[in-house]
Length: 121
Image 1 (tube, rainbow, N blue to C red):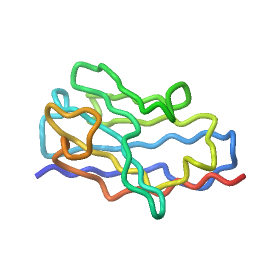
Image 2 (cartoon, helix red, strand yellow):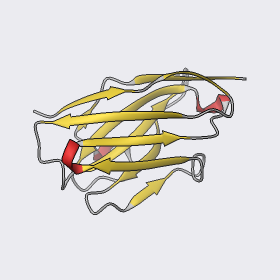
Image 3 (spheres, rainbow, N blue to C red):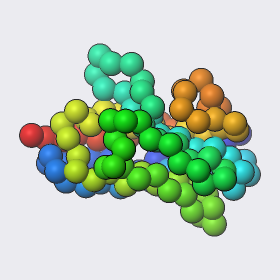
């Protein structure tokens, strides 16, 4: 079974930066698709970014130009670099793994436990 271990969440001021990490195990990582989703209080889970096994990337309009998703196959790890953070970015961020997955939550098979990101004004 796939296990995803996340780290890097925390409290930052608006305009600051944060990098989230997600380490995967239990499945071949190099050909897996990886995604980041977030869920704010009272809101539905929304797509943030994805990187396919081919390294093609996708971003939600709300984060494009500010967030960067990347992967290190040698470390079985995916990253989300978040720059110029805004209060509306405050949410629990989840790492996900799938095959043939991109921008919808139901395309992914495995999920991390989530990490809290809080952006103050």
